[in-house]
Image (cartoon, rainbow, N blue to C red; front, side, top):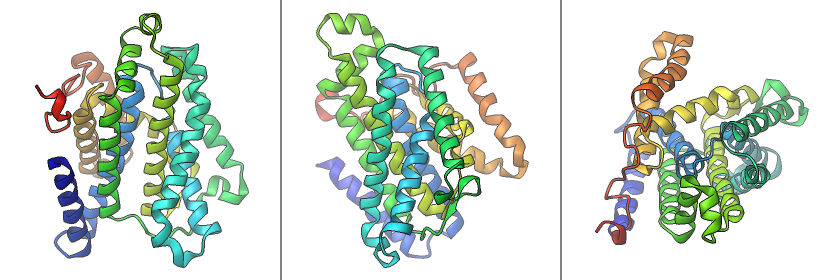
Length: 308
């Protein structure tokens, strides 16, 4: 009940801030980037942190969600319907990404570690290449025409939904099974954990929220192109996951917020700031491989039954 009331208060606060003049548009824009990156980091952490697989193609899922949601608001539904159907198109974009996640889940049955990383990297490159060669979505020039439907209220709403759904999943029996896969997949199989089914659930859930984040991103910028979803975008997500801590929802929130704000502070460095992202990942792997939070979780995130 406390968590529900806190979530409601945060959404109300976001609505007040976005509707009034307390925050200027630049700060609102940065906060929305932080929120979208939190959704991406939380969703990627489910696969990379909690399940122990190494996926580097998360930007591909984001791209699918962004393009599907944009096509729906620009080419399918009347423009006037935009604000009313925005939640629906985000969900449809997420479902399209989840369908792609189902495709990626099958190779994970037989591959792990470096091999799965190569598969997901190939997936990211295929999505980008396909989008670059479809004229209907602008090809390499990109796609535009979306109304600015993303605001701070919607971003906060989806951050809370992502956090709540992933928390309940991780602390459920399914989540225990996912953690067992991370520790030892063979042993998990031997004690009766249905590892293929859990991998499908985890990949689809992770991809769904990446697709939702893509839809929010597209309707914030009002322009997307395939280059926005390259391996560099996936690298940013990896940095945020490992900066905050693998296996920690609190760490995902911290990692995404710190990295996004750091990149914003370094904006005057222009292209050199993108060098700092991969460099930060290298330094993290050397000096603190478990990230800021490691496997720890804030008591505010853990369900009451787990706080003992």
